[in-house]
Length: 237
Image 1 (cartoon, helix red, strand yellow):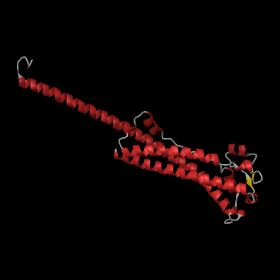
Image 2 (cartoon, helix red, strand yellow; image 1 turned 120 degrees about the vertical axis):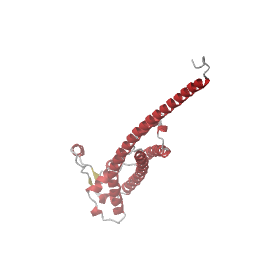
Image 3 (cartoon, helix red, strand yellow; image 1 turned 180 degrees about the vertical axis):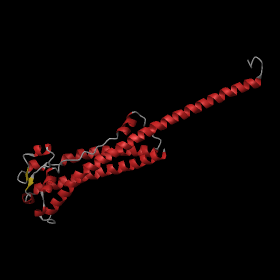
Image 4 (cartoon, one colour; image 1 turned 180 degrees about the horizontal axis):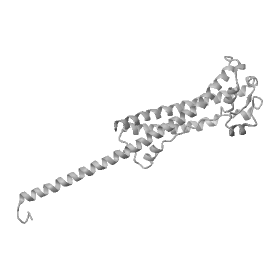
C-alpha cells in the first residue's frame, strides 16, 4: 500500500522494521542455542566429574592391596639380603608372595568423555584445557594397557612352582566364599636356599612396582582433570 501511495518514507520504515525483526529473531535464536549448548556442556561436565570421582576412589582402593604386596615382597627380599631376620616374616608376608603375580585392574574409562568422543561432540566442552586433559588421560590408559600386557608376561605364579616353599591352604575357596583371607603357609628358610625362587620373587616385585608407577600416573592425570572440571563448574555458578 505504501508503495502504491509512493510513500517512500513509510516503505523505508517498513523495510527497517522487517530487518530489525529478523535481526532480533536471529539474536534470540542464537542466545537460545547458546543457552542449550551451555546446559548440555554443564550436564556433561557434571557427569564427567562424577565419573572421575568414582574412578579415583576405585583406583585408590585397588592400590591398597598393591601397597600391601609391594611392602611384603620388599621385606622378604630384604630378609634374604640379610637386612631383616627371616624369623620376623609372618603369614602376611606369605600372602604377599602368594598373590605377587596378580595385578590390579585400574583401567577406568570415563563414560561421559567416551560418549563425547564417540559422538564427535567433544567440542561442546568450551574449555580447551579440559579437552586436552581428556585426550591426555585416554593416552595414559592406552599406555597402561600396554604395560599391563607386558608385565603380565613376566609375572610368575609362585604357588604352583614352589610347593616346598608355599603350602596352599586346601580350604582357600571356602575361606574366600566366607570372606576370609587365604591361609597359606610359607617356609621362608627353604626360599633362602632357592635362587630360582628368589629370582622370580624379585621379578614379580619389580613388575609390581612398574605397574604401580603407571597407576600413580593415571591418578595424577585424573586429579588434574578433576581440578579443571571443578573450576569450570564453579565458574558457571
